[in-house]
Length: 115
Length: 116
Image (cartoon, chains in turn brown, cyan):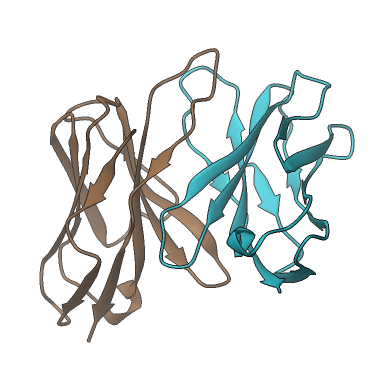
């Protein structure tokens, strides 16, 4: 079974802190994604990566950065956390598919509260 | 840009009955994929069913089936013989068929309650 794990289920940080959210997958997937999930807004893509050291902005990248130094690990960084970044953060991974859309596998999520 | 609309924020169904969740999407592409994902309370999101746009036949997975109407850009999910374990948030998602396009566009979700 594919396993996507996230470093914390719950996290509480103060405004202005630098926050690291870690995601690890064990299926050798090339693609990794970070989403933000808010009630009534669904999932919105923050950043994604097709390969090690590669990253692309999603729909809401402002206030976030990412790092992918190893294939299995994709980190989301909040440089200076703000209260409007309080949310559920979901990581996902998938195999690349030119002629087929492979499913994305999701982690359990990190519920971040910024006070 | 593609958009996905789920017009039912909440739905409820009696155990053992059938429920249909609605999803519409907007795209100018002819090649794409559609998905339904399920997110149970406090549990990980999992894929329920997938539909390739080039396939006319509606996808089916056990009690889950879709009604894919390409011309109408509609992709509804039917759950038959509903079970308590079907209670979850359901998200409809779109993926372009263009090579190298891996992003999913999600709808806002429908919360399904199953009443015993």
